[in-house]
Amino acid sequence: MTERTYPADQAEAGLRLFLGWFGPHYARSVSVEGAESDGTTLAGNVVVGRRWKLHTTVINTFGPDATVAWEAGRAAIERRLDAEGRGLAIWVPRGAVPPSVEPGLSQLVLALEAARRLDDGRLEFCRPVELYLRRVDRSGSVVTVLGGLAGHWARFTNRVPGTFQLNSNELFRLPASEDARQELAERIVMASQQPEVDESITIEARDCWTANDLGGGGSCVLGTPAPENDEWSASLRRNLRRLLKAANEAGAVEQADARALVILGPATYAEEEKLSWALRGMDPSLFAGYDILAVIADGVVKPVLLPGRSVLPWDAPLR
Image (cartoon, rainbow, N blue to C red; front, side, top):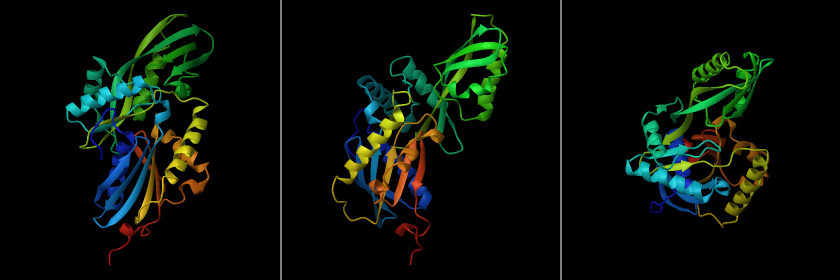
């Protein structure tokens, strides 16, 4: 691995996350023999079980949306976490801008200290935000939503006395707990009983992001300042196709027992990632030479192509 620089190499963090899944999945020790990265594509050799070689390519799709201000903000958070000895991958929801100056930076660190571990091993940390509910008419029973709750309008519609506008632009990601989500919906419904027409009421909520514990090696912030829109899916496919072609044209791969392709990209929620969908719509010859294909989004490693048991050499019974 290269010397530590800021902002951190997201492709390198992707390799560490992939190996954190790969080793336990196959119950084998793994170590990186060598890796080269330009920040967008990483090529590395992973030694599996001290005897087999897995050539691993990591493609980072975050790049096109990055701005100078965004990269400077990433660097500020990573330096702060590294100074405190924290090795974390912080996943920023689409369109959110993580705080990189005080007091927001210290508040982010405090939220991380209070993070809870989810069932899948990720960390969830939450920061307080405010929602703004305004009644625009006494008739009807509907809530028009802006921001992070826009996809959850059905939780309120037909339950409120009138027509409302809900501004949830400060909230980007709901907590994983369904009970916590339902509790917030109930508080919004209760709050709708109070304001008169054109009056607003403030509702407290929590914006909950995810993180992975990377152990040693430093922290990395992953995300994009660009919100998802109708054009983004098409641009993702174009960028991914370009990156796959470049990786395949990089030259002959040295001898290896197997090859893995890992694709890293943005998603507010892991279950809504578009990388798997984009790959299924592409020419399969772009990734036909790989034995393992996985995508990583929102801190979750999701295998897209995985051979059956006993196919790969380290997965077969030892003789």
